Image 1 (cartoon, rainbow, N blue to C red):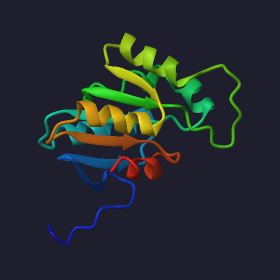
Image 2 (image 1 turned 60 degrees about the vertical axis):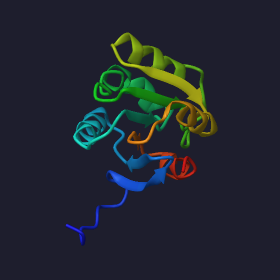
Image 3 (image 1 turned 90 degrees about the vertical axis):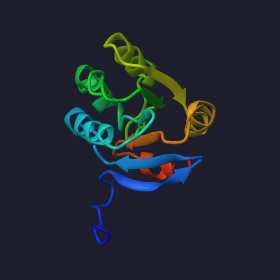
Image 4 (image 1 turned 90 degrees about the horizontal axis):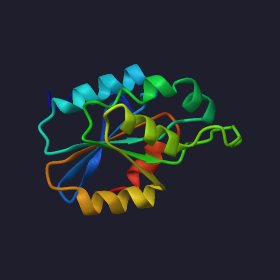
Length: 148
């Protein structure tokens, strides 16, 4: 087991800060996110926080109904702005819409806009033993490293 090397960007352990462990998973489809959070929920923890950054406005709009229901295993979903990729913001969908949808579906989501705000939120609410799992295919993996 000690020699096991995980696949890059699949439930990849990034490190620990203030007793909170940080992971990233490339999963960006609702089924992948659901599976990742199910696996994370089996790891001993106090709270399970999911950082969800949707990668593109098109995906946010197309997968909206599925995205808002895939976070049942998370105690809270921390949402920054949508990663635009190669798209321009047309104003048709915003990360706040995702937060409203998650909350309307019985989840607990917070719009925080930036990763700096996410770090501040985790500093305020995180306790030793918590897990933070960032999911997405944009630059969320780079941004998650900055949370440490």
